[in-house]
Each structure stands twice: as C-alpha cells, then as structure tokens.
Length: 302
Image: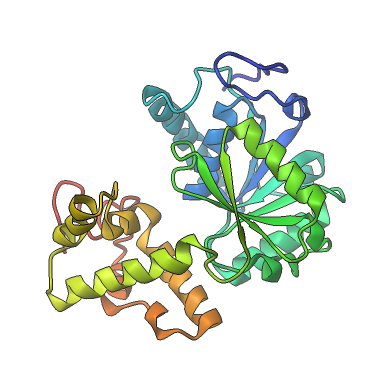
C-alpha cells in the first residue's frame, strides 16, 4: 500500500483534515469489523496502525484490506487513492503515537474491558478512544479506562466502507473534547454521525436483535422458510435486506453474543437467543464469513 499522503482538500474525497496529514488512526482488533475499518481509513488516505494478538490474523487482515479496497472502488464507494499506510502490530506499544483509537474486538464485555484498559494505559491523555460496540453500554466500558471522558461509542455498520451512517453513542461521562475529536475523525472518513443516548443496544440493536431473534423463531416453528421471512421485509416494507440475511452479514456468532449482552442487562426474555440461532453457531455456521448461515450463498439452508 502506498505511503503517500495528502494534506489538503482533494477532488476525489481523500482525507482533508490537517490533523490527519501525519497522525495515525489505531484500530485494535483485526477481525471482520477491525479489518473493514482499516479498509475505510486507508482508502480515505489515513495512515492506520492495526493491532491484534494474533500475527496470523493480522496477515489475513492485510490481504483482506487489499481485497476490500478493490471491491469498494469497483462500487465507487472509496476514492482511487492515494492510500494511507497500513502498519501491523501485536502490541500496544505504538498507540502513544495515535491521534485516535478505535477498539473493535469481540463483542463481549470481558474482551472489550481488557482491550480498553490496555488502550487507556498506552495512549496519551486526551486521545480519543472510540469503542466500536453494538450493545454494551458505553459508560460501562468507559469505567474500564483511566479517563472515561475520552471514551465514546461508535457503532459502524458492516461493512463500514460501504455504509456512511454511524450510530454514535455519547456516554454520561463522555467529554466535549472527545465528541469534537470524533466529529473530525468521521469527517476525515466521510462518514455521517447519528448521535444517540447510552443504554443496552442503543437504538439500532435494541430493536434489530429482537427482530432477528423473532424471525429465527418463526423459521424454527415452520411458519416460513428464511427467504420468505426476508421477502416480507423486502417486498412488503421496502427494506433493502430482510432480518435473516442481515443476521448472516453481521455474523450469527455476533448476534448470539449481542443477544446475551441485551438479556443480561435488561432481563427481557425476548433477547434469549432461540435454539435455531444457538444450533447454527454451535455448528460453525456463522453466516457469510463461513459460507453458511440462514443462507448458503447459492441457496437457502433454513
């Protein structure tokens, strides 16, 4: 990937904020979302430090970033260049040079708490720490850090290099400086913030996870196959995708993790993952990333 950088406004939409001319964005976690966030940032001309505990995962991420950049540009969703530099690391040692950090580890409280504690200890005071979370309350996560005022929640949709809107969650202790820093970062990434209040699942997943869970229950009951459940949403309601195709895109393992977070914090049994979801996850059928979920990407499984 090219290490050339742009410092001024460019016609093709690459990074324009002088703050990002030389500063790096750090992304912690090289899974599906962390890799896609790195794609978005380098595709917008930002230098990125991508960290993960696994060297093998990082090497896969390097190839996936290249592939995703090509895909996004074929669709006209990212400018043609120049790319930001992508640096890989298995440690937090270089985080003190980051202008901002996005935490994108697995959606479990334990994993996020451990990551955020390490990030907070490694960065300079005042550095924006954005937790990319889909359900865990931001204030709960901020309590795992040394400076809760630097922490804000971001819920990028998958894949973030194709979807401009970002659900932004301001926690009770999130400071004005952190919100301003996030605004500058999202501007550099050409993303649109939708700011909502804190709480389990925020707005998007407080609603969506229940819909997905109920849709899976209907399939398990034999009410309708997965494709017909989805067709009700696409054909009758005008949704771009139905809930079960959306679940496959998110990852059924992530769906089950998110449902657990919601059930633990709300006590609402509507968030207890249905048996069909649990069975698919136990079988390793996570959706698009494994080739099988509610669909087999060539035909329906359910």
